[in-house]
Image (cartoon, rainbow, N blue to C red; front, side):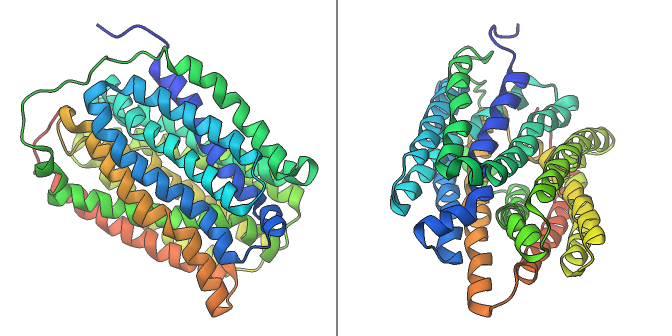
Length: 398
C-alpha cells in the first residue's frame, strides 16, 4: 500500500527546481558580488566551492540518518535550513558573512539530496526508475538555468541582495508541503552484508569516480559560463540571458528526460544500461564542447555549446539509478550520500576555484581554462563504459 500524503515525484521535482535556483542564482551575480567586495577570480570561485564543500559533508552525514529515521524528516529539515540561509545571504554585509550563509545553504541542500534520490528510487519500479529520476532532475535543469538567468537579469535592477530575497521566499512555502510528502516512515531494512562491502566494491568506486569527473566539468562550466558568453564572447546581456534560458529549458531538461528514458530502455536489454547511457553521452559531449571553446564565430559557438549541454545533461537522468543498482535498499540512502559527498568534495567543490586559479596564474582566457572540463568529461565517459561492462555480471539487488 502506498503511503498517504502529497505525491513524491511532482513535489520533489518542484523542490529540486528551487534547490538549484537558490544554489545557482549566485552564479549570475558574480560581477556584482566581485565589485562589492573587491574579490579576485580565485576568491570569487571560493564562494561556490564553500557551498559545495559543505553540501558534500552534509550529504555524507544525512544518508545514514535517513536510513534510520526515514527520508521525510530529513527532507523537511533540509529545505527549512537552505531557504533560511538564502534569505540570510540577502542580509550579508561582508564577504565572510556571505560565505557563511552560502555554506549554510549547502547544509540544507546536502540533507535534502540523498533522501530525495532514495525516496524516488524506492517509489518507482526498477523498469521506470530512470524516467522518474529524469523527471525529478528536470527541476535541476530548469532551476539551475532560472537561477543563472534570474541573477543575470535582476541583479543590475534590484541588486544582488534583492535577488536573494526573491529566490529564497518560495522555498519557505515548500517547507510546509514537505511535511506532508508521501513517504514511508522507515526504509526497508532486510538482512544483508555490511554497507562497507558495497561502498568498497569496484563497481561502486567506478561509479563514484565517473560522477566526480563529470561533476567537476559541469561545476566549472556552470560557474564560468556567464563569463565565457558575456565577457569573453561579448554576447549582449539580454540575448545571453535568453540563450541560457533556452539551453536550460530545451537542452538541459531535454537531455535529462532522454537520459532517463534511454537508460531504462537499455537497462531492460542488458544490466548496466544506465551506466552505458552516461558513458556514451559523455564521450560524445567532450569533443563537441572542446571545439565550441575554440571557435570565435558566435553562431557556431552558441550552436555547439547547446549540443554539448544536451549531451552532458543526459548524465542527470540515470545517475542516481546507477548508484541505487549497486546495493540493497537497506543502504540506499547511505550509498547515495557517500556518492554525493565524493562528487561534491572532489568534483564540484574545487572546480570553480581551479578554473579561476588557472586564469589568474597562467593569464589565459576562460575558454582555454575550461578545456580542463572537457578532459574531465572524457574521463567520466570511459569510467562509466567500464562500469556498464562490469554490471552485466553483477547480481540484482532489487
